[in-house]
Image (tube, rainbow, N blue to C red; front, top):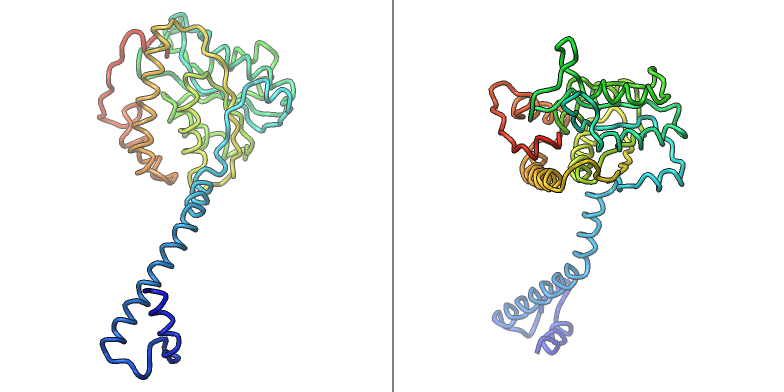
Length: 293
């Protein structure tokens, strides 16, 4: 029926696309209705063909530049060069030493030093809000970044190549202080970030969020290096993995959607984050979880 009506319309329409003679007002109205149906059908066909490509392009634009996770072997074979090699905070033992899982990160940094002697090594974190810090013989708090820096210095990395972050108290703070206090002032563009498997999902999400936020003074290129989970009991590791997953879900569902630019992220950290904002209570953690910090 549609084909027949269309054929009749072609023989009788003028420049306007509607019949100009021999048709009643009702016939012209019916012809206009058919024409609109044809246009709708054509629109649906085009949309069905183009939409998947559009969604794919949108997805590519959203994920473009998101750095993949590498093993140390991957980077050793590629001999990739970096301006900064970063080790996020991972806690201290009760004696003030780096725990085994942090030493795993630091040993990976030492491996990269062989081909990146020109790079700056940035050791992150003052401590954690989840438990009191260990103290030295004079009763002074021991900073995680200081212990990590000394670990690398004692193994051959010059002190001039070691930058410390002795301000941050969590992974978000790690990324924020890394950017504003070290990377941007020194124009360190190519950045390798090393952490354990249990920590990598949240580290990668947070550092991409913070380092790629606009406005950007430096167009950072990030590489993530994953090392094994060592030194934790099964109970401690399970508690930490559960905490990481819950924190990551909350971050993606709420925080990252509402705090996008650098100034907004600054507002979140110092006005809403329990580790930095005044008057925000800190949630207690279990003994098993505290042992992983």
